[in-house]
Structures are given as C-alpha cells and as structure tokens.
Length: 257
Image 1 (cartoon, rainbow, N blue to C red):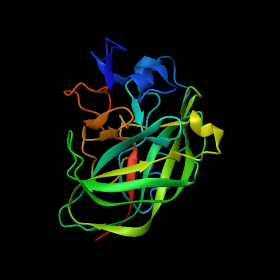
Image 2: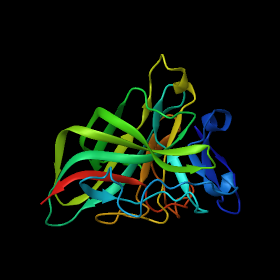
Image 3: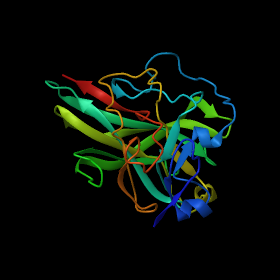
Image 4: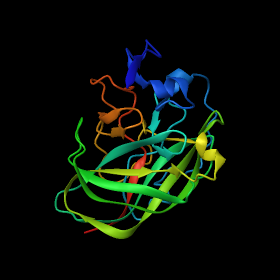
C-alpha cells in the first residue's frame, strides 16, 4: 500500500510514495525541484509542431528541462517495476469528427534507450475521473517507434517519443477523451528491462502546442503496482502527487472533417 512521505516540504506538504518505490530502483515520479541542480538541456526540435506529429490533431507541447517546476510521471510496463499508465486528455471540438491513426507520449528514459519489444500498448477512453476508469473506446498493442527528442536533464534522463501507429483507425466524434501510450521493456531475455524506467513528461510552458488546448489538470494515473486508482496527476487540490504540471507532452495523429 502507498505510504505518505515528505520529500520537499517547501514544495509539497506530503506525497504518496509507495513502499516499493522507497526501496526500489525508481520512484513513480521525477520532480525537478527535488532533483535540483542546473539543467544541461539540448534542443532537438525547432520552434514548430514536432515533425512526428503529422498530420497533427493535438499536441500538449514540449517538455522544458530548464523549467524549475517540471514533473515527469511513471508510464511503463517493465519486468522490474511492474506497470503504471498515464492517461492524457484531449478534446475533439464540436462539429468535428477525427480519424485517429496514431498516438504518442514523450517519455524520459532511465537506464534504457530502447523499448523491448518494439511495440506499445495504447488506449482511447472517455469519462475518466478520480477513481473512475471511464469507458475504453478502443485499445490495443501495435508496432511503435522510440526516438530521441534531443532533450535531456543533466545527461541522466533522456526524452524519447513513444509513437504507436494504430493497426485500425479510430473514429471519434466531438467530446473529451483520454489517451495512453505505454513504453514497454518486457523481454525476459533482456537484462536491461530489470532496471528500465520511463516517465511521461509534462509541458509547463506548452511550447509548440497544437490543436485544441489540452484540458489542464486533468491527466490521471493508474497503477496496481503503486496502488494508484485513477489519481489526478496535476491537481493542486487533491494533494496526492506534485501539483507542478498542468498538461502532459503527448499527442494525437490523424485527420479531421
């Protein structure tokens, strides 16, 4: 079960940090203010929508390693650390229909620079709220790429885009939905998977965001490993996790009419 542990009293009154994370190889989030130090970022993207979001229906924006308040959250399926899934909201505007052909999350990688196997589990859901998983509209596991964005924190945490191409397009009418794309390291013959960790990045600056604005403070996490039952990742009022973020660095690829 999760235990409360104060890590940075000036920033957060109390974080719920699972016992498994206290004694294990990774915590379920990375907090810039807890890490401290100076950023050694390098930018690989021009000040435009990333080329991999094409055609780009929605993008929450780039992670900013230079920000003093960024937080990245567990988003993985690994042999060593179990599972954790981040659910990121997006909006199909009134009067529009979207045909989704791809989804992606931008994830910091620790102790790993690949996904193994080269696939990713994904989902599109509606109706997610605190403690409520909502309705799964579509889900699957499809081929995925895992490419560096060029951004990193202190040459320790490197950001990669986990992009999955859907085997069958998903048609969505107007409404609010949540996407998930989870990078895996589940190959029992790959020793790297025992210590691999991936964390979906936030976008405090919303730099290069595209499409309908991502709803703020409405990302959620579910993890049976850590005991998180659809907790709000970015809520400044619930007090479960750091309130630094507002939106996640994730996006939707496809066409619209």
